[in-house]
Figure 1 (cartoon, rainbow, N blue to C red):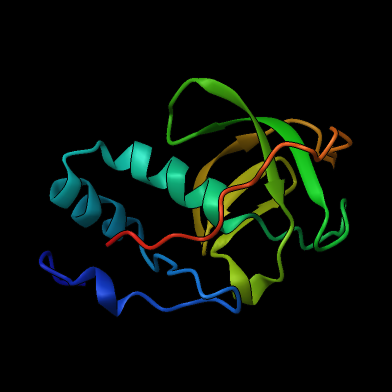
Figure 2 (cartoon, helix red, strand yellow):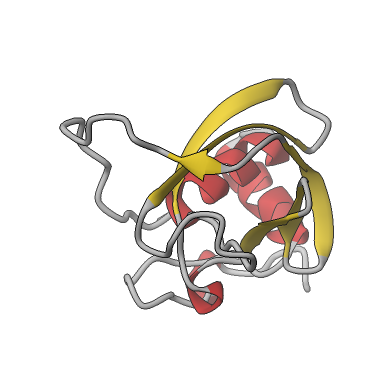
Length: 127
């Protein structure tokens, strides 16, 4: 991927959200917006959701877990579970992946049973 790739070239998932296709995209977007690439990755992760190939939590539900991404501090995550075509992120056997690239680790994946009265942001575009 070229360093000056335009954000408009990012593919959309079925929800109309742009998806990054390479960790290099995080660097390009980080440079463009003056944000650390790891923060771009976290934003991308939260807005894209996660694919669970072992169906620990059913698709279209939310999964909750404690995890560590890109050697950053450990955090709690609550994410929508998506089909593999709609997110580049997945978790398998305690590992987090972006495509085939290992980016972190998770503890036990569990159904997020928190009250859903809080609002999830609607999909937004980077530009």
